[in-house]
Amino acid sequence: MPAHGVSRGFDVATGVEPRQGRYLTRNSTMGHLIGRVAPLGLGLFHSSTHGSRRGLAVLRRLRGFALMHVGRNPMIRIAAAACASIAGTISRAIPPAPAPNAARSASRSPRRGPNMPAHGVSRGIRCRDRNRAPLKKPIMGHSFGRLHYHIIYSTKMRRPIIDESWRERLYAYKHGIVENLGGRLYKAGGISDHVHLVAELKKDMSVSEAVGKIKANSTMWVHKTFSDSADFAWQVGYAAFTVSQSELENVIRYVENQAEHHRKMTFEEELAAFLEKHDIKYDPRYWLG
Image (tube, rainbow, N blue to C red; front, side, top):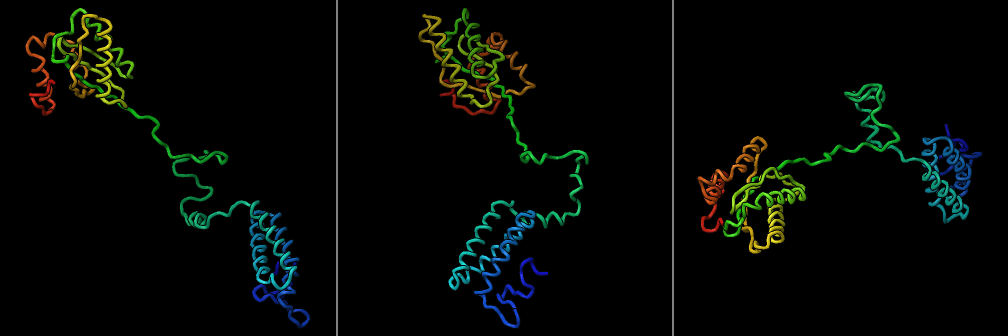
């Protein structure tokens, strides 16, 4: 059945139309065709989305035919411009056509129909509101970690200058430093020439950075608080060992009993035992620098 407004015998490929036993030339027929079929494309645009796409295709093809013969008849130039204007209006107004591959893959799915719920989803539950944005891939919103350390370091040149009268105050001050760094100090202990810290450090802070800040702030506190301790200083290095949750209480008890341990061994012997236990190689000439 021919489109409305188009003669039954018109051949789009040849551009001719039988009429009273004679054939019209393309120049005389093109303007007549565009004038009658362009309103058809506009009518299809107002009918539905599917009709709009059909009307858009008709108008674009007519415009192509018109541009092929625009030099022979000035009226065809006007008709082609009108087709282009109407086609532009339609193309901006209608939604984009669905991808053919998506429609083909959906039709081939043997187990998922339009009325079949997704696997594991109740039939009465809507998976997603159409008005909402599509759900993003779930991601892990937080990072988790709990890092315990047993930290040991001595005074400079292992001098016994941590006086027993203010030793506990020094440990309390170290508690505050670790808290300000976002960590937790479970226990601080030691004797006159070194300290032990059992601490949980912030997960995004390195051990060397934390120990450096603990040393610097505690040294400043000693200098400001005790005028006779102007030469107080810590050694440059340190030793740090990780502690599991199951061994945390045992390490805390060990630090609490420092005075008793050092009745049997010196600081050098204690540190050497820790290094050997954790399989850490060291040079005896420089390890206590």
